Length: 244
Image (cartoon, rainbow, N blue to C red):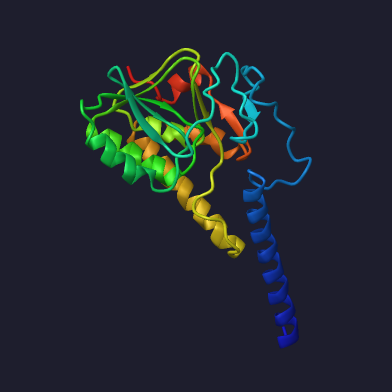
């Protein structure tokens, strides 16, 4: 292979890698992982009831915000996790933003009275912060709870998994899907894929350590980021999200 041919091949590879990077950026801008049209059927909106075998719903916080009935509409949740306390009940609500793990760990550690159980409601967000804060909850011996009519989507189930005791009331929902790890940049395709695979591996190790069956990731990995897979009650039990 002569120098001119090598140059052409390298140029083609570079163009391909730049194209992948552009797709990743556009995917972020459109609130979802880029997919070629026609490769999967359009999922119903979140307002559609969930039934066995029909559990994927369109998911874009701030756009498709209507909750699945009979869930309650929480109104506008905070842009980052917010810790509140009323009549001895502690709640953690809002999107999981970068840096929330360290910030909330300090607030929880300083809480008075001591927090025994946290009620969660979140559309998800930063996976790394969810894992870090989940580990903190486990070390601190704090339980987690989901109330009827409320939800925990995306990275939130990983935070929920950190609870020493975990309760999901009838009518509450857990939902999972694919995640991005770190910021998408114009990286060569193989580096972007490597980063995602490493992140998914970290999640599976974490789930196993928390007593959750990592097979729940089979639903997450097969559900695009602009959709959510809502776990049925028997799946919540089967994967170990509820403690005895």
